[in-house]
Amino acid sequence: MGMIIFWMGLVFPVVAQNDKPTQTNIRHTYDPKAPVRLDHRVAMGTSEATLFLKVSLHGNAGNTPPSLTYEVRDGYKNSKVLRNNTIGSQQLIKQEDRTYFYRLSLPVDEESQYVFVYATLSADGAGAPFRFDIPLETNTSFPLTDLVTMRPNEDVPLFKHYIEKSDSFRIVSVYRQAPTAFVYFYPYDFAPNPPPMAVSGTESQQNLTIDSLFSVSLNEPLTFADQGLYFVQTDTSSLSGISFRIEDQYYPRLVRAETLIEPLRYISTSEEMEQMEEEDKKAALDKYWMKVTRSQERAKTVIRNYYRQVTEANRLFTTYKEGWKTGQGMVYILYGTPDKVFREGEREVWVYDADRDLSDMSFSFVKVKNIYTDAHYNLVPDEDYKKFWFRNIDLWRKGLKTMR
Image 1 (cartoon, helix red, strand yellow):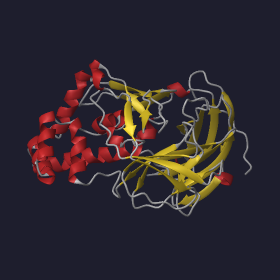
Image 2 (cartoon, one colour):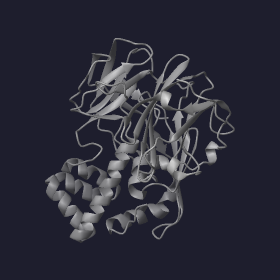
Image 3 (cartoon, one colour):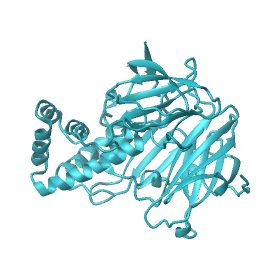
Image 4 (cartoon, one colour):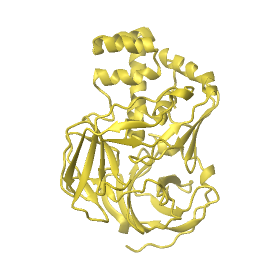
C-alpha cells in the first residue's frame, strides 16, 4: 500500500491596513534577528476556523505585547478585505516571558483565502507594522484539517512541524471531537534539493511506501520513538490530515557526524561526498574542512556559520521533509536571509541586493500543495543561476562568505 506526494471576548472593528500585499517586503518572516516573530496553526471547521498564534519578541522590541490586528482577504492581487478586527487580551491564552499565545475564531467561506496579521511594536513608535501571512485556502484540493498537535498538559499548540522523539504531545480534534485517529508512518529519507540549474533534477512525483498504520486516542498524551514522517487522519477516505516529523532531541541542530556530512553536498563535489561516505565519519569531516579551508581558525569560522544556517533552515522550512533539504532551505543556507521577500498567492520571490561578494540576484519559488503540507515551495530552476551560484560556493569554501 502506498501514498503519493502530489508536487505541484469583545473586540472593536479596525480600519483595513493601507497595504498592497504583492508589494510589501516581508523579509522579517525569515529573519532570525527580526524584533517580532509569529508562528501559527489553523484548525478548520465547516464554516469557522480557529487560529492559534505564537508571537515572540526579540532584541529591543520591548516587554509589552505588540498591537495586533488582522484582515481576512480573498487573495493577494486586487484583493478585497472580507473582515478585519483587533486581537487583544480576550484572545490571549498564555504568556511566557516575551512570548504570547492567542486563540481566536473566524467565520470563513469559500472567499476566505488568507489571513493577514499585522503586529505593531510599541518600542518602534510609528513604524510600519510587521505583516504575517496565513493561508486558509478554503477551496484547495487538500482541505485543511481541524487536527492540531498540542502540549501534553495544556491547550497550547506545538508551533513547529517536528517533535523530539522523547517528547510527549497530544493530537486534538478542535471541531469534530473525534475519539481516535489513524496514523501513517513513513521512515523515508527524502533527497536534498538539486542545484537550481538542474531542470531535469527538480522535485517530481514520488511514491511513499507506508511502513505502518495504527490508531491512537485523541487528546491523550503520546510519544513516538521512530524518526520519520507521520501523517494523521480522522477520516481515511478524505485528503485532509496533519503531518509532522519525529526527530532526535537536538533537532533542528545537527550534531552527529553522519548528519553533519549530508548538508555539505551544497558546497562539495560528488567525489568529496563519496569519499566522506566511505571513511570514518568524524575523521572524514575533520579532513574535509582542513582540505577546503586550509586553516584551522578559518575552518572553525566556516563550520560555525554554515551549520548555523542549516539549523535556521531546519527551523524555518521543515514540513514533511527536513528544512535543509528544501529549495528554500538550500538557498537560505548558501545566501542567508533575503533582503526582500515578495509573495503573491502561490509564488514567492527572494531578492538579494548587491554586496561586495555578489551582484543582485533573485530566486523564485512556487507553492506545491500535497496531502502532507500547504507550506512547501519548490525552487523554480533557471540556467541563469550559474552566473553566481558557483562563485558563491567558492566564497564558502575559501571562508570568505559574509552572511547577512
